[in-house]
Structures are given as structure tokens and as C-alpha cells.
Length: 264
Picture 1 (cartoon, one colour):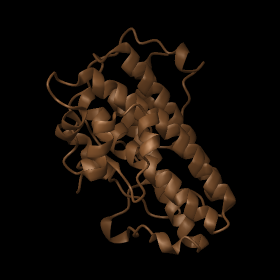
Picture 2 (picture 1 turned 180 degrees about the vertical axis):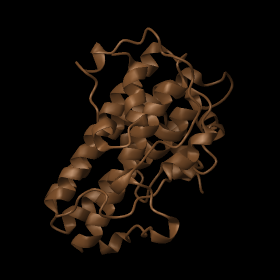
Picture 3 (picture 1 turned 135 degrees about the vertical axis):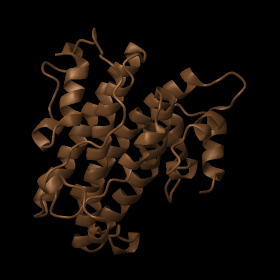
């Protein structure tokens, strides 16, 4: 199967079976000889339980102090699961949108997409253990709203890997600790798995940020200029800043310090 064919099925599928379709034979079995024409952004289909809820029906994300309540942990995990689903949809779109990108960029992005599919399954399994099916709670379209702002691979890595995924270097261990304090060891272990994978995903973003970095600009300047309008640089961090995780992900000390100091 061609890479663009697989990405097209993931992006264009309106059911979980298609969105979670594994590459037949694995990533290395996909060919990328005919990447096809660039596909402009459009909202991917969501039907039935996956449909985006009207604004008036959406629920607020729980306060950190509420994690002792299972209902609030369920609500948090459901939101995190939808983040993974939106991320994998948008990664599939990025493979369609940038057919001329470096082959190693496309191959690496495909691997991250597979990781996101696995993350979504893990969240769904944990929710199932807690008596909930994905779609029982309303979901939003926040990630999608950045789609029109993304016009090249540099925009992409700044939007996804260095904003949403970088912020998860803080969010995942923070909520993992809260879940553990509530006695929810299974959810805490899941957040640790997510955290460890996010280091690799941010490293992917850091690699390509450095690749596209214009001469005379710092990494942080380049990042700041290519963030999506709805997600300024400060969206790339959480309440408890994880410096060592960022260093492990290949971000330099100047970038890390600028992230620590930036405000929304």
C-alpha cells in the first residue's frame, strides 16, 4: 500500500475501524513512490458517537483538585483520548498535505501516527475498565481549528510536536501524579507511557525545527513565528515544567529557558 493511500483512509474514514487502520505489513511495508497531489485542509468526517458536539453541549475540563473523583478522572481521560484521535487525524492529513516533504520526515510522521493510534486505544481500554465507551461524553474540535494556519512542514512541527506534544511533557506526569494520589494506579501508569512516547515525538519535532531553522534565528524565534494563531508558544507547556524531558527530546538550553519564561 502507498503511504498516501493509508493516510487517506485514516483521515477520510468516518468510523474508528478506518481511523485506527494499521499499515498492512507495518510502516516499513508502505511505499511512497507516488505521494499524490497536496491536499488542502478540511475537517475530517466524524459520525455517530464520534461527532463533534455543539458548543452548548460540551463540558469543561475538570479542575486538578477534582481528580479524587472517578467521574472527573473519566472526564479527563475522555478528553485526552479525543486529543489523540484529533492528533492522528491531523497527522494523516499532514502526510497528504506535504507530498514533497523529505522522505524521512514522512516516514517519521507515519510512525508517530501509529503511536497516536496506539495511545487512543490505550485510553479507550482504560475508559472501558471504568465503565465508559469513547463517545459517551461530548468531544470538541480544538486541534482542528488550527488546520487553516498550517501551510508547510515547519508550521506542522511547531503546531503539533512542539506545542501540543511538548505541553504533554508537563501534562502527562502532572496528571499521572494526581491519578496516583487518588489511588488510580492504572491511569497513572497510562500517563507514564504517554509521557515516555511524547519525548520521542517532541524529539521528532526538534529535529525538523533545526532542519528548517533559518540562518540567524534562534530555535525559539523560529518556533514562535510558526505557531498556529490559536496556539501561541505558551500553549507548549503545562503547570509543572519538565526541563529534563525537554532536554532529552533534543531541545537546547536557550529554547528551554525561553519556553519556561514565555507567557500566553
